[in-house]
Length: 271
Image (cartoon, rainbow, N blue to C red):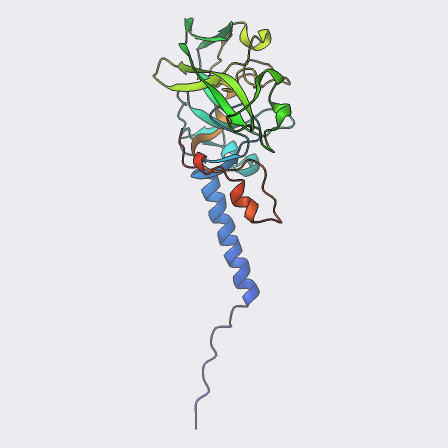
């Protein structure tokens, strides 16, 4: 007489398998975005000339340690700041702004705790010494759907050799005492931004500025006009590399425009 077969393990349903996969995927993405890399898109012109509206970049998350602001939506799972490292002057960082409408912002680190910063006639002074500011070739950016004429003041609107509308800004090269060098824009005499009091950076904070000096709400201005000093624990990471860029002309229902709107020459540029 045949012996009945032992019952096997009940088969997992396809729905359960899908849920398990999605949970594992969500956990992987959460860990990746929180502790390794996170994408960031540029929404404004405050970091011209280095970053254009429509640039997409990866931010490395390990450089300065971790805090609640390293996690998506600022989930309060990390007390204070762990594995902390201070940024270097000249680093381009993404951080969480303060206030009821807090959001992610990108700026350049200019001052560290104890530093003094001042602007005189558009020139940066760090710890009482003028930072070299060398005139270089004008910065030229085409007028596009995500950078229309309204974003370029009338004195800077021009056309290129082919008759295409462009924006032409005076451009300068700054070099910090640590050797970090980068380009900035100076659109003209704007006393509120170009002639300031002396700022002394408090302990545990940084002083941040946009490279587009006359069009950046940064640490030179107190909230709500600007952002004031930024606590170290609000720094989320360091700008690493541009992985995509678009001029804003793409339409979802027209896939061929995804390529025609791409600025492929901007991909792969580091910081």
